[in-house]
Length: 86
Image 1 (cartoon, rainbow, N blue to C red):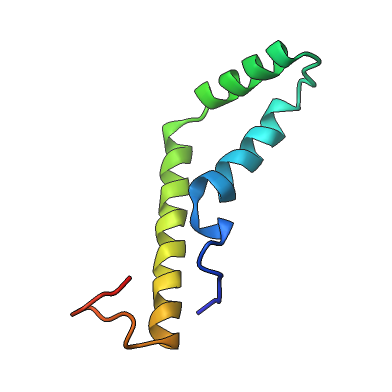
Image 2 (spheres, rainbow, N blue to C red):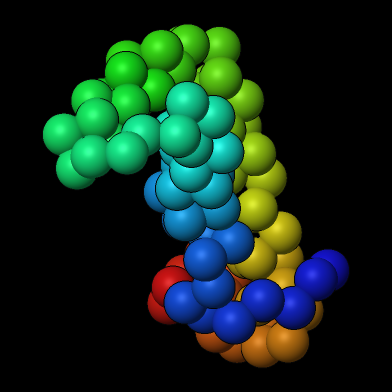
């Protein structure tokens, strides 16, 4: 298991995927005004394909499972299939 802090950005799809992805796409066209920036952000969001969202959510699920395994390994009493605290 890998150790991640409880509030790690690795545990939220918006932080570990969306913001970095948008930044890499939005600045390709180098918007020069606030309006152009907003339009680029909207364009990039609209162009996100369903298969990409599916891959992100599968990866998110994998990360959550790894986190839960870590918690269980560190503190078996904190999490069990019979009585989950988390």
